[in-house]
Amino acid sequence: MADLQQVISYIRFELSQLVTRNVANALFVRRVGEARGSVIAWVRAFLDSHREEIGVRDLDAAAFVIVAAAEGVAVTASPEFYRTRAADELAMLFTRYLIGAKR
Image (cartoon, rainbow, N blue to C red; front, side):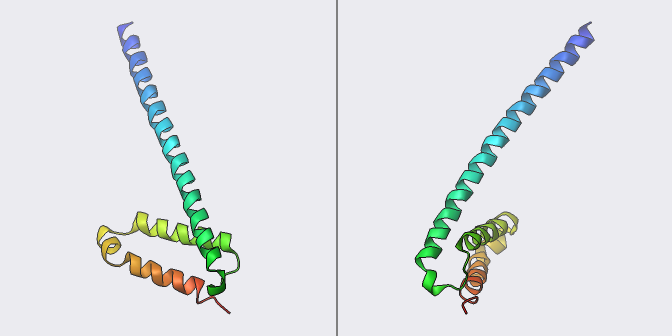
């Protein structure tokens, strides 16, 4: 019977740890999503204020693409690349996407 009680205690402990981690992860994911939405809205408003200077027509899509590209670089770039070249490379990418598309 003692072995069964130990197994039950272990299962309870593991389940509580799993629930705690999943709740924390769910809250983190929700907060990141909320922050991403705010950043996309800000970028979209910025693009709208420069509508005459850019060539893209769908500002919602452009704002999403810009935020997703920046986020992708931030998450995957090495610290060295991020520190030394990421800003210049992203600026060139965004400039070509926004202004290079002007017809």
